[in-house]
Each structure stands twice: as structure tokens, then as C-alpha cells.
Image: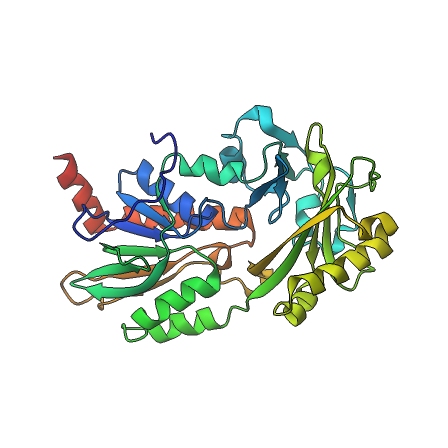
Length: 372
């Protein structure tokens, strides 16, 4: 078992190639690669960022963790709950958020139904993708520039000039990025038109986020998370400090509504930050509009509405299955391709794809050959 994911390493096509390449070290990509690893299928994950997690993101600010993407980890299925239970129990905050206001506008109000499991982490929600990455060969700092097909394999070309190839490529990054990488390669493959049409039918929903720090004398707002009905710009207000044992500052995380985010995403951050803080002050009191410090983040592909998810992966093949010979395959996974949106959908999408790849005849044959 790998103890930690690796630091950036420049690869070339002269190195031993894996059977599967995964682009994107979010929960979906890591779950897929871990499932493959557990089934003895060689896989490598390429991630352009300096760390893993995607929207399951935690940032250290003034020495303290702050969750600025997903605020907590919900579990509807027993399988996902078991995966979360692999985390160190010492960092678990069961039931968070406890003090919840106005759940009707939550991305998934079902998370707050009686009996549903949810948790936060003292060290931040990124503890979960880091757990998945321990069993996976992750290459950080690898920015994929383009894809090509050669002799039944997919060639992944990196912006630094390196390249890798494999018979099966899994795209598990943000939806718009996955589509932009896949489309130039697969558009002329058999049956690709239907899959591409499905990809173009998925709307991209951005979200603007402001992390705001207040002095230790700032009041407790009286909630852990709030989805204010009366707001125009704010969708979620998370009292991040309520997850921390002894916070130095009161830290609030403000996430904007979809419509406001779409309208102002191209404007300078200081403009939309000022507007979001103004509304926070209107909702919670003047103190909320005057933080000691702020940080901003733009989630270009923040989420997918339940009514738009595709319910399964989109897979492209370079050769008709009825024709003999090797064929390259490209699959897109993530919460947009799951039965349910959110982190659990992303995880289950990755697990399902790992199972499907491991069951392919050529993959099983290669495993038997390696074992022999």
C-alpha cells in the first residue's frame, strides 16, 4: 500500500506505461484509481494542481484549516459511509452541521433528513481525498494539454513536453475541462455524436466563494450553516469556525447563488466580494460586512443540478467493438455522470468505472499475464 501520493515527476513515453491513465485527482478520479489498484490494474493519476481533492477542498489560513468548497461530507449509502469511516476517528465531527437554518435552498435538502449521516473533519474535508490518494500513484503538477490516439492507445501530452499513454483514459476533472480535452480526439470515433451531444447538454454552474476572517471577538452567528431564503446573492453561509476545536478567528465562508455567480464571474474579485459582504452584513449584522481579511475563489464548475445529471459515464471507443484489433477508450466520470450529484455521486462514479475497466477481457488477460 502506498503511504503518500507522490511529488510532481516528469514522465515520458519511454517509461513503463500503465493500463489506465486518470486525469484529475478529485474524489471521482482517486476512487477509480484506488479501485483499480485494489484489483491489481496499473493506473496513474495526473493532476495539474499541487494537491488532491478538487472541490473537496481545504485551505490553511493563518495556520487553520478552512473548507472553501464542500463544507461537510454527507453519506446516503452504506458503501460511502464505510469509505468515510476509514478516516481517523479522532478527526471526526459527527452530525455537523448541527445548527442548520433554512434547508430548502440547500443543494440537496435530503442530507438533512432525520437519520441521514453527515460529518465534518477537524483537519478539513480534504482529509477524505488524501485518504484515497494513499493507495494511488498520483502525479501532481501534470497539466494535460491535449490527447491523441496511436495504435489503439490514448496519448496524453503534457504542457511541459512530457507524455504518457495507456489503452484506457479516464477524464475525472471539471466537466468543462474533461469535455474540452475529449472532444477534439473522439469527434470522429464511431458513435461519438451521441456522447458529445450528452456532454454539451450539461450546463456549467459556477459559484463564487469568499473566505472572511474576523477577530476573536466576533459574535457566534448562532448557526453552523445557513441557506438564506431572503438573500439575493448569497446561497450558503458556513460558520467554518464551529468545526475547529479552538479557533483563533471567527471564519465564515460565503458562497454565491448561481445566477449572481453567472452574472459577475468575469468581474474583478474585489467588486463581487464587496457585494457579497454587504449582503452578509444585511443578514447577520454590520460586523459581518467588515472582516479583518478575505480570500476569494472562483469555482467555474461548482455543481450539477439533479435534473441534469446523466446517471452514468460517457464512454468513447476508437474502433467499433465488432472489428478485431486494439482500440483506445476514453471515459468521463464524476458527479455529473452519477446517479446522484455531490461527493458521494463522484465517489460511486469512480468506483463503478474502476470495476468496469477491471472486468474488461483484455485487462483481465494482462493481469493474468503479469501474475504468470
